[in-house]
Length: 340
Image (cartoon, rainbow, N blue to C red; front, side, top):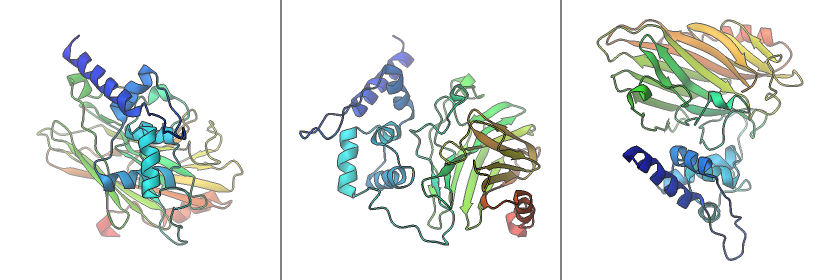
């Protein structure tokens, strides 16, 4: 057995130890069995909480907002069902203990916790989805309904695939045997989320997500830390609809694709989810996922320079979607922040 195989086996054994729960004396905590593939997947992707505050945040996130089952919490954290049951009781985290949402607040935006796959179909096109760049944006009309936005899902360049938020297609780093370390969003007191990642060759990129009452505004930036110019900087930003009640039909008949707006309607046609990005490359949709894309492209970036893209996501209730898109355009969301 080589060193790499031994390391993988060690992680799988560790994961099985973490996720194989024992029943309490009362028998209230059911046993869950995982096959070898599922145990290995949890070993690769589970994120054990760092400390008590981190544990509390993620359990509240999963139970109050994402409404995860204990099994899904286990898959996201690697904790046993018995430990999850005891901790939820100790911290009093239940649907009944959830604070009431206040009318007029900004749209609710949270880091996506992983564990639950954000797609319905085309799963072979998103193997081992990483939570690193994913956020959940909750619908104003239903606190249990949300979209998962991967921002970014992928960054392409003249050098090849710089970043991918899953592992089905190798990046230039994976081809060199380099695995990027996991990362999480920084959570600011005002509800803003942001992160920054430095790639092995010195390229840096990051995202800032700012919730508002009318929309969620996003900024995606890239800094060229190499000594050569970068070109072909295409970006994929995916809005996944699996958990958006009324929007998850695996069809493109309910999609409206324009420049730069991509929108999807509810089954009754009375509600819409809208996204857009500056410097548009293309809008498209994948019925199998299902998802919508307004995918931008960074302008060519000389060595030492920085480029910024601006994004939008909002919700609309009404029967004049084209009028709503015209209204959104008047907000000036594509202008640079300092120019607003």
